[in-house]
Structure formats: C-alpha cells, structure tokens
Image: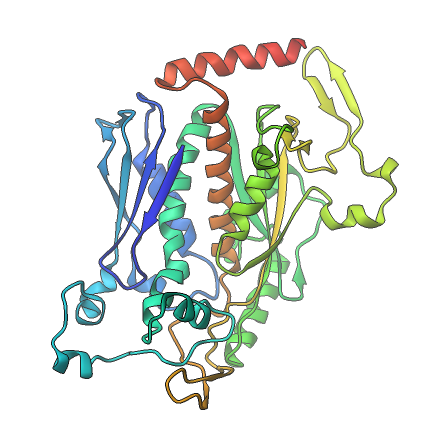
Length: 388
C-alpha cells in the first residue's frame, strides 16, 4: 500500500491517492469523518480550525460503500480558498498584478522550512515553501489514516492516542488501557486526568497571553496487533523503524520511543527484557511490555506503545528575529495564523500515521486482492502462531 498527498495550506483543496487496498472492504464514511474532526479539536487551536470544516469526498475507488481494489482518491476542500484565490490561484499574473500581490513573504521564520526551502527551490517569495510545509497537509494524512483504520477495524486491531504532557503539565498516572482509550475523548487536551486537563488549559492560556507557544508528549497505543508484522532481515523492513520514521515526518516532531524508551538506557537488562509466557488461551505473550510490543523490528502481539515529543510551534505572535532575504537586514519574523498549542491535534495525526504503517504492514504480509481473501489468510495465521 502506498499513498501520496497534494495541496497547499490556502489552496483550493487537499488530495490524497491511496493504492493497494483490497476490493470489497466495507467503508464507514461517517466514522472516517469523525476521525478528521478529531484533528481539528483541542484547546489552544487557532482561528483556522473555526474556518475549515474538514469534510471529505471520495473521488474514486469506492462504490456503494465498498472498495473496488483500484486507487482511492480522497479530497478535502479548503473553504478559506475563496479569500486567497488571487494570492494562491494557478493562473499567471500580469506584471501589474504581480507587483501589487499582497502577502509576499521575504522574512523566513525560525524553526520553519521557509529559509532552507527557499534556498533549495530557488524562490524569492517564501509563501511557495510555507504553503506546502504547513501542518494543514496533515489533514490529508489523517484521511488516509482513517481509511487505514477501516481496514484495521475489520481485523479487530484498535488504535487510539492520548496526550501525556503539555509543557510542564504531565499526565503520568498508572491508567488502565480502557482509561487511556476512552477518557481522552472527554478532555479538551486529550488527557486522561480531569485535574491535569484543567492545569494544561491554564498553562496554554498563560502561554498564549505571552505570545508564545508550547509543545508536549503524545502516546499512541495499538491493541491486538498480529505478531510477526515487520521483519528482522533488513533495516528497511523493521516495522518499529517505519513507525518512527512516519512520526518524525509529522511537522514539529523531534523524538520517538517505544515502551519504556530512553529509560532503558539507565535500567539493568534484567528489568528491561519482557519474559515470555504461554497459555492455551492466549498462546505466547509477555509478562511485561517494556519494549512496547516490538522485538527485532517485529510485533510481538503485545500492545504497541509509542510515545513522541512535539516541539513548540515555531510561528509566534511574539516573533523571533530573522533576516529579510532581499535586504539582508534583521527583522522580526513574519506572523502567520497559528496555534498556541497543537499537541492534542498532533496526537491524532500520530495515531493515524501509526494506523497507516500498521495497515501497510498487514497488506505487505498477506494476500489481499479481495478482502475475504485477506481475512481468511489472517485467521489462518492467527491459528498457526497460537499453536506454534
């Protein structure tokens, strides 16, 4: 399975094309819509989320509620484009129109792709760079992830996310899987604890008043994964490596860990490795899950636990200094519409990038021209690994 996204932040639409899904997979469009709406929520989001309503339509690959086996096209209309049609239109401009074009950007923002992208692609209006490097593109990725979750849902594999930390507010209670799965939906910042939710809201408000931004840590959990997804035989087939790469590809993410992660560096090996157990009811399983559901780049069948850190959003209403690429003079960086905190939304994006990699791993392992063929192969594999 592979996919591509296209579209700019203030362009007419975002699009994604997904290839490699089986035919005859039932698709619940309403459930997918709810997944996209999750990305738009969260305390601390900016005005853009009030403008856009991320509803989508299928352009191909779906007929009468089921996949055809052909490429699936998903489109998300940018409602705000009507205010940007001249600035972001595809038609050439006259010299006079070019001269009077508003919102030309020559002052790169620290922490963004603006300056390096402008240098690489040799453009003098940095809007050509920031429109595509904007996190708005993640709406298309969440759509692909929502489609992937339809496949995983049909195979009884569940994926969900929560926020562990925003700034100095850490929600690190010893929660059950059920609490980590269900409670974030009731929280404005996708935390489990009501008390920590209120503390995080206060911190976000204080940060916004200062014209600043704030980051945090998110967690994604995959329940009931099949054992043996991924492979040990080559570096680019290790599934934990693929998941880590997909998460780091999300705007502003700077680190990923599985299970106890970096704590393993200061913990004796006898307290890190997960002892292997066997029962007739469960088959092989682990006494603990310190390695986060992976051994040798392959899933163990235990829940996959992934944590990732997001830096503060670099667009600030109290902008940092930069340099104008035309005059080379120091200047305060351009202010674009932004969020004080996007960690809750980022947890949703992470969740869907993990879903994409999980769906891809399933489709790489099993025959899947038709969904019934895939389902039968998965059931045979479950029986074989349980009796191994």
